[in-house]
Image 1: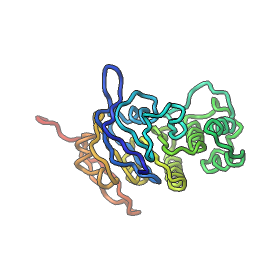
Image 2: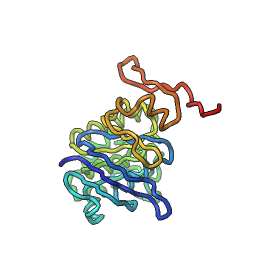
Image 3: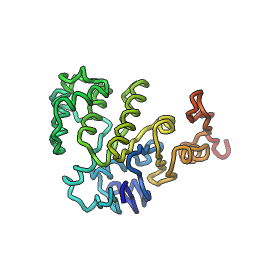
Image 4: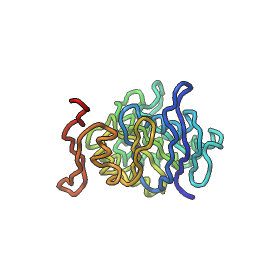
Length: 258
């Protein structure tokens, strides 16, 4: 079966399980899945576990192959994880860093391919700049280029928009959606902005305290009831002037006795 299937999945630390008995029938190829939930609910832990960077138990099937049974090196050929920030102290040009990522995954594309990708991301002018000279947002865009150039089957992006301005957030999500469809890969993205999920995602997983609360299309998952249950807010979903659903928050859910 193509796609990503998760069954009875646990991950965390020796003293505490963060992700508990998580099961997802299927995350489809060619679509963006957004992972939502409040701070500390296990979003980043889950992404790191899917990438093989956190201990995990259960079943994790990617396009019919059991990932947990693979050596880490073979798993890394199929799964690419982009953390919230790139490692510090790497003294390479932007162009060099992406070529290194490409070769590490066995790719043989040309420098022109790399420059074309940088052009798509709007950072071709930074090709000969050193990584340690870049802003946080520029580093995130370089990290995205490094991830895409490796041509993964499963792309995991942990808050890739956190250092980007509003214009670039839309630009990057449009690019990620386009590349996800074109390459027919599975992309899982952690975001905090629920309206980003409504606008750009085709599938949503919503977590609370390490457990899956809802799984499905954005309009099915992001409802007034789930906003109250997971985030503790009173919200409603309305259409903007362009016909896109958006969340409006009216206040906090009143606690008993208040």
